[in-house]
Image (cartoon, rainbow, N blue to C red):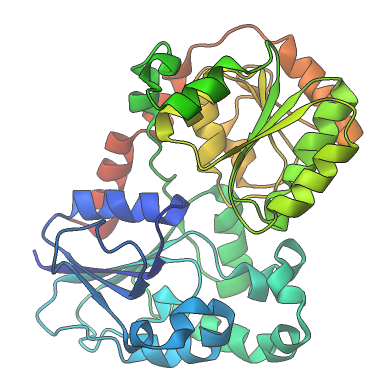
Length: 367
């Protein structure tokens, strides 16, 4: 069956990209259309096509492109001979127009655009221009969501947001996580071959708290530093992004050591997870792949009381849900997590593995 996968913009890394990789593997004969592709080697040559926006400066300025996205998706080159269209959407990809009404359009929603529907959790939604235009965009967004044959959400948390925003129900299909691959190595440190990464690994404190994500204010890595400081433990902060200088300033103020690891390999990331005492994840996330990876590495997770990430934690078994994201509450949860018994990471495989995702996605697209 000939299908088309559409997605927003393809970046070099990210949760949506991991889902897209799995979609492309499940439906190997499908073509892929996106607004622009910043990871051109990700798929075989000729499989991915881009919108007209890819040939403009807008690809470097997502916020400026927003007013153009609905019209761009409505004019996407969707052929008449397709059997289905699958939109991987976290902005407006679900707006894609399918000319033949007999062709089903399935939507995998990472979330309705947070800056429109949940602006308190996304700083982009607080800008005056966005606030002024939001009512119009929300109306269009809700109408486009009615076109979907069926909608899948990546968590119950997002399913609830879809019901509020779009007035639609959704099937929950958790994203795929490389839990099987992570569990294959008892010691990921042995797979770290780069000399500089080995130096980082060998210099780790015996007991430390870890946080990892893109360095943006939304990911709240400053709370990882503050909570570790309150718990009296060193912190290792992993990732990269525009918030690095602010985070380093927070680290200077901490009384306990804070080490930054910028852009690690997968092997080093998993080795850090295995060696950390607790993985702290403060943001309100739609789902949260990285906390699942930490649990697959055998490390308990501490998170706040709100968000899709708490669906992936077995409280008081694989992690602790803090009373709030106040550093004092996170520190108390860290102390509780340190006292948890070791757990079998195999319990994650059936819930979040790639085979499970492929099976559920095929059922959703009715293939």
